[in-house]
Structures are given as structure tokens and as C-alpha cells.
Amino acid sequence: MNTENIFDESLFETTSFITKHTKKLTPRQKELLDFYNQKEPTSPVVGQIYNLTYTGETTTDFLFDGGYKDYIRVEKRNIEAKYLQNTQLGDMVDVLIMEIPDKTYLIKGSISAIYENRAQKELVSLGDGDYVMGDIKESSPAGYKVQFVWNGVTLSGFMPNTLAGINKLSNPDSIVGKTLELGVESFSRDEGTYIVSRRKYLQSMIPGEIKKLQVGNLYRGVVTGTTEFGIFVEWNECLTGMIHKTNMNPDYKISQIHPGMLIEFYIKEIVRDKIILTQVLKDSLWDFIKVGMVMDGVVKEVKSFGTLITLDEETIGLVHNSEMEKHSLKYSTGQEVKVKIIAVDRLGRKIFLTQAKS
Image 1 (cartoon, rainbow, N blue to C red):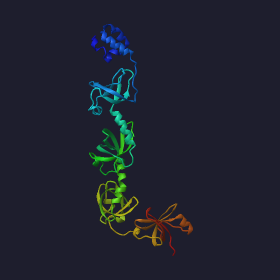
Image 2: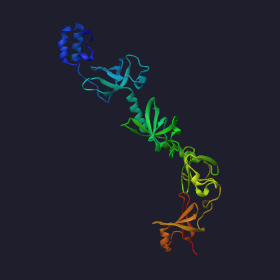
Image 3: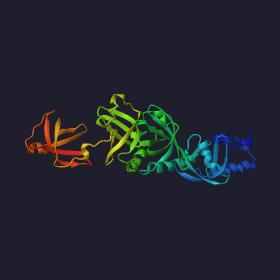
């Protein structure tokens, strides 16, 4: 046996081995062995951070001395190495104790985990309007793989498809390869991944973008969907509105419109955060309606709370149950009626009616 290697870890696995070969040790080796045996078998605590001396490295680990029976070993990975770029032998470094296996007593530590834990606490506590810049790496049926940097730490994220925009993206791959502002929704401990949201960031932009809009100005946007009543449009990344079929260009038919199609329109009216669009500049009932007016209408539907009356192709009013009972009114779907405007809630976009006197 080569006694010069007597202090290798593999040679101290059993006390019987040490006893068997004690006679072959030099006086200096015996002195070191006595010192080793006299030391208190202390060990650090998993989950705690210790300020340790950077001692050197092996082919697989960076070594740190804390006065324990073994070095604290930090695996040689790029994510760990970058925190030691300017570190010299003998420098003091904070190391998080990750694991102490019972059998081998190899103390495993990490430097990068300290910064990742700090980043996690900061990111999950970000306020509204705070965001990170994330690289959209690739897409999948479920969403997007994202990578971003926070305080020098490179982190992984995942963005579900439903959070990639204000509305569903007509072309999911359109954002792959881009660097975008993203809000942080949560942290998944099981996956070690942050759930991020483009929608969260875009929603924070809405109030400011609405203030920039000018009624009557021409805009261009992307169709995000259609219904039998009209088409939905998105523009300025975060704003959405609907063009009612009565306000569509006469040359357009809803059946010919599809998501992703570019379309021009005007801002007709802004009510709170509701944006009403049109392709044809014209007056509507809302431009001149007022309390006391008498109008012709058609009963659209009788509900439990009252009767809905169609005033024109895009405007509906309500005869509330209280008015129905007060005047002993009874309506049926499709019935033509004369109604009187008794209240107008412009912000809520509601018109309240009663039956007009004959």
C-alpha cells in the first residue's frame, strides 16, 4: 500500500483499515491522524449559508473550507463558476449547504442557489407594472419556453398560450425569438420554473394607451375573432374593440373576415375602458339620445328582470319590472311598441324605458 495516500477519503472508510495500517504511518502522518481523531465531528446545517474559505478545486468540484472534516464541494457547472470568476484562493465566499449524504459524508453546496433564492423572493413580490425582459425561446401546444435574467441570474420561465397576449394569438410562432416585457405570475417549485405572462404586462399599458386615442382618427388593427353581431379587433398590442355589423364597411361581410386579417377602422366612442369602433363615420342614437324622447321599438326578449326593447340595429333599452308592474304592462317578443326614455347611463351604456302614452 502506498502510505503517502493514506489521507485519501477512500482510505478512511472504516476504522478497521486505519487500525490495521497505523504501524506503517510516518511520525508526521500519525500526528495528523491524532489531530483528525481529536476534532469534534461537526457538520454544517443543510439549508444554511456559511461564509467559507475558497481552498481550491478538483476535476469535478470547487472546494471550500469551513473547519469541518470534509470540504464543502460546489459542483463545477457554468452557473456556479460565473460567481467565482474574480475569486482568489483564500477569499471568503458565501455557500449554501444543499446536501450531506450519510454514507459518503460529502458536503454538497451551491453558490448560485443563494442568488436564485433571492431572485425568487424578489420576483414573486413584484408589484403591478413591474416586469422582466424575457427571451421567447420556443413554442409548444401548451405555451412557450422563456429565459430571462434577474440581477445577474439566468432563470427559466414558462408562458401558457392563454397568457401570451390580450387575446389568443392568431399566429403563435409570431413571438418566438423575440425579447418581450413579461409580468411574473408565480413560481413552480416542482418544475423550478417561473410562470410568466405577456398579458399581465399588456394590461398595465391599457389605461395609458386609451388616453392617446382620438375619436374620429383612423387606425389599423388585427382581427381576433368574429360573431354574428360583428368583429373583434386588436391594435397597439393591448387595445381591443368591436365593430358592430351595422358599422362595418358595406363591402365587407362577416363570413369573409378571419382572425389575423388586417383591418382599418375609426374610434367612434370611448366609454370607461370600453372602446367602440366603426368603419363608417355616422351619427348613432347615443349622439342625440336624451331623457323624455319618445321612440319606436321592437320587443327583443322578455327577461325575469324586465323587457329588452330594440331601438335600432345596435342599441337596446330596458323596461324594468318596476315599470311593468307600475303600469300593468305586458309584452311579447316581436311586438312593436312606443317607448319613452326615462334615464340614460352613458358610462354603463344603459337606456331605461317606459311605455309612452298613446
